[in-house]
Image 1 (tube, rainbow, N blue to C red):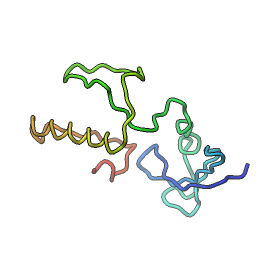
Image 2 (image 1 turned 135 degrees about the vertical axis):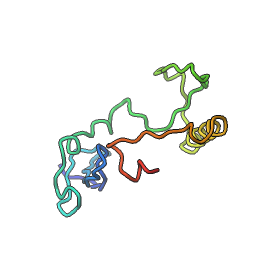
Image 3 (image 1 turned 90 degrees about the horizontal axis):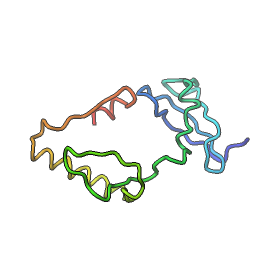
Image 4 (image 1 turned 180 degrees about the horizontal axis):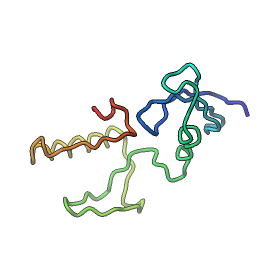
Length: 129
């Protein structure tokens, strides 16, 4: 199969930053390769990097932000997978909501009340932010 386009990307699975070439046809990834000249992987990919892209085309994948229609009260968090509980939002609206809620917490409880979780699956730069 011949690719309509090849997209260079960075593997999402860990913080190493392996470079990958996504071969795309009919708007679907059908093969993943690694460029031989690119650090840090120089043409090699782990199993997850080479074959772990099923999530890209999964029917349950979220492709835009969702905001709860009814905000929950602090301490009364309940999970919901019911689509009726959520409404689509723009990225700007979703990020503004997150910012305003974090600022509310900061002003109410002080700057030490907010923490950040970091992990090996994020780059050092992502963890720093």
